[in-house]
Length: 430
Image: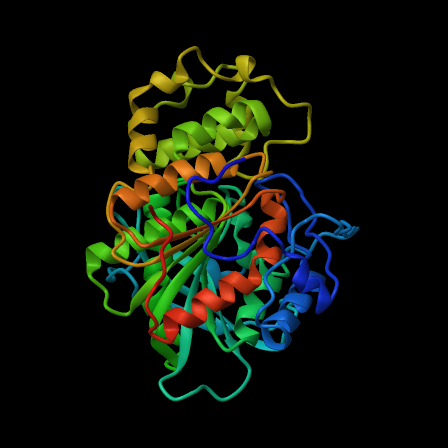
């Protein structure tokens, strides 16, 4: 597949990293519900970053997939997640409470603190959101730990689907590696995951605000965090990371340095159309969940058939739509569902590139990603470039989304360090 932008890095040949160490490709599981098992590849990448700084992440060719037999344990929803009812008034980003937590299974020696803080719903209501903060387990540098805010991939829409309720934080190998490299990591669950508020599934704008407001809440809990920060996200979180950059531009935050999006950046109308062909039916049920939160006047039966409605209700208490055989799309969706006014408005509000980010972007895509291939990402990047954003777009032709995180670590870390060092951001927009 031809990339519409020139590649700023020599990624056509990734084999140089193999001279530093060997690696394993991350296990490719379904888009919404795969847990990372990246310890081996991230440990290798950690070595590459320090021992072989010139090496870039290697191509997928020749890498053997790693097999894992045990999913990370889930954790109970404790009283920590019980938001006061009624919620006392608070400004967005105001900390409600924090507490250290010692039961996560992470790859590096880090300290973890859970946070509960004020955010805003898509309709502007005060809601509570939860998350975690990871910091290196050592003395902070002068000025504090530079901050990476993390935007996670889609995990479900019920409270128990929060990443902070997974034993390895869902993305724990990567997040603890960031902390091991000297960064604080602020990872929001998004409102409605963990805390019992409605979750705006797939809504870039409100999820982005949850991530943005987590940063001042984390600083209130841990004063050793620095003022400078950037955001990184994976899959749906990649789109959320772009949304954070757009929201930060609106607040004119001088401390915001940019965004990394690893897969997931695409026009949502094209993305969900592709879901009908390549992914599971349950994705569209979660879309209806998001619509009902963003637009309270939306009625799910307007786009879902009677056969799909029991599965829709089941998602109030589960992270996936049951274990039975999937319904065909034509048994689940009403005719012309995409013509519904709320569907159109939802897609329009979540289309990236409608507002300038005023901050540099690194967008990483995989040509073999079945959900958001590089062709969809390239179209979104073209729109960002038309907004005069500074974008570095890197495409790995032979990688699916599950392999992108580990294989792009050297690009991620180099770009992150350059932003915190104050160096001028590159761009390969035309």
